[in-house]
Length: 221
Image (tube, rainbow, N blue to C red; front, top):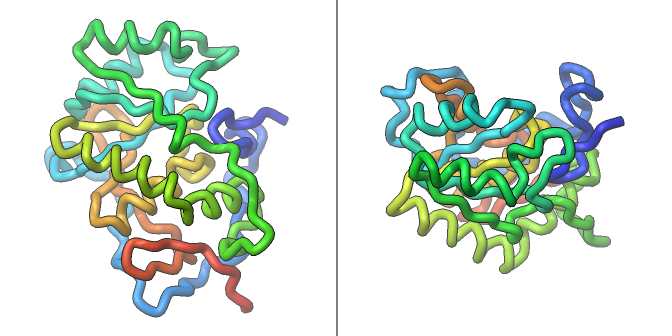
């Protein structure tokens, strides 16, 4: 089985169409923030998006750069734990920054937002059955995560930021949890799905939000 290098989640080629990664789909927050629509919208309708997300997948570098240019990205933030790809070396840390610089896009490796986080013994995120996602949700409770997220939000005040990981679809990747955290901090997040289309992020259905704090507790049926 292949694994996503961001968080250890199995890749799109090895998972069924609907991965059983959640314990529950019921909302567990007494007053969750309203989630954005998940329908795809033309770029022109979503220019208000504060932070974009994207998975490089197996794209050729030219196609990837076209994706970013289509949405005016000026700063790519790499949230892979290890910024390299054995099968797609065009996205290695040694090559990617140069490709981006050629089209006037900056590069930043944000290891503090990377995946592969261990679960905690007293986890409050048991709504995640997948331990990789639960571990990342546990990490989201830390001051380190909060500080790194705040840095991205601050960067987005002056740049058009896209967070990048490896997995093609966001719901198989820890960037979907980062997007949850952005949403509860009042920042709009959108996934880049084509050079002309964005998909607004929809808050995870069983997320429990209190202020800017987000957890994923297990709800008994």
